[in-house]
Image 1: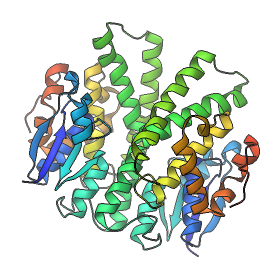
Image 2: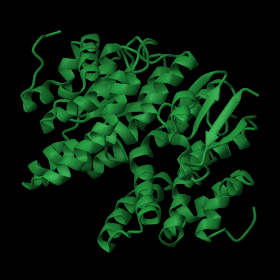
Image 3: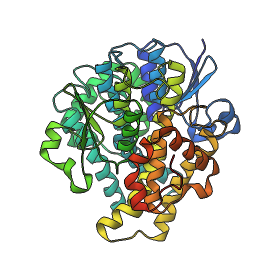
Image 4: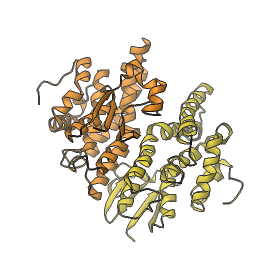
Length: 226
Length: 226
């Protein structure tokens, strides 16, 4: 087994890629990295695993590669990812790529900052952000959730069509993270609520396995086992 | 000619893709969109061009596609982009993809926010940010410029190896934008300074053509015509 997967299930793209690897039956050497203990910040990690000191990342046959979406494409090119998850036909792949490129500085950054500012930073510093700041961050995040609800999910059951792809998995993992900050996306967004159920059902048991800590820490495990 | 390219040369990824299309000898119908006039905010643009109301985007044989990197990959799949700019061999492509995915929430977001806060917002509102805010935004941006200088350009002439690729073009366009905010990356970063010269030389005359407005508005045209 030559593929080493370095990840922390508290990291959104780590979870997404973990789910994708499991659904794809990719065999890998399990290399969990505890971000909370700073295991990614050692010189050894920087030199031997990932020069950017982040997760997820892989080492495959000696190739060190970072960035979850670059890893996904690399594994797809090696024939490791089934076409239903990441299409090979260029017209279908373009639609999935459009989402994967769109989400970085929209959904991902705003959900991440919301989660960090409201959950992680207070945990580390003991200081809670002001209500004004919380409101501002929520508005920025909801501007992008509005786009998911009203544009991406306007006519289809999944983000890029009628079938689940990696786009849905990456997006769902970002949105699930906001549970930790006591944000319940299901209240305001009926389409997202129904879509999250479909994504979970389409990915289980791997979805629930990857979200074990998120459910546990947030105290918001979904009711039904899927 | 079936490819329509919608762009504004004041937008960084619009410029990058413009340079790439020109270097690739891709024929396209020129569709400039004046963001400053809000031409992307009309209902007509949303319905008929790009549902996300941003640039760059394309319409190709009826396919509407947004997101510069998704467009690049789509055109590459159609055989329109030369392999030296975006490699087809999966190991080389993975290295370029790693940069393209890395830059979104690091280099791109921090350079953009710096530029917007220091140049664009004051132009629109008449209010200059506080020195404290400027310093904070500069530090965030420089944390990523440090990574370009010390990691990406550590051992190679270009970001992903010894040859120019689309990774360099996307990155250079983000960094050039900061000229408008009176930031001169060349002072503190000798490797970036030398690399920017190489990127410009490798892309000209298309690089200077795409940057005409940036040079003019910032009053910082490079000395030598390349």
